[in-house]
Length: 81
Image 1 (cartoon, rainbow, N blue to C red):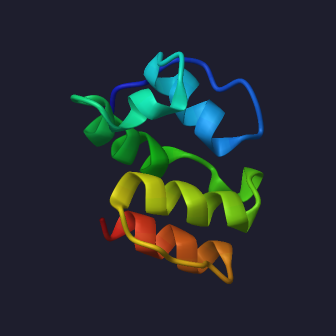
Image 2: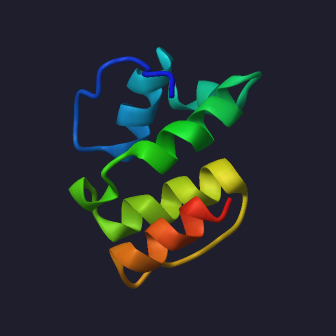
């Protein structure tokens, strides 16, 4: 699996942006970045982030509103995409 840029914070949006080499969060959804963001999210250790952030990035990337109650639930939903 291709490795993207360096993870630099504990904000999942910033980390995905950094992983893709983007300067701004809105770049995540443009061009091939969206597919790469989906792939990157599946490989990330989501336990490093609050569940609220995981719910927010899930909605942002997949366009589906979910409120995760556990990391296991979040990981399963992400992996099923």
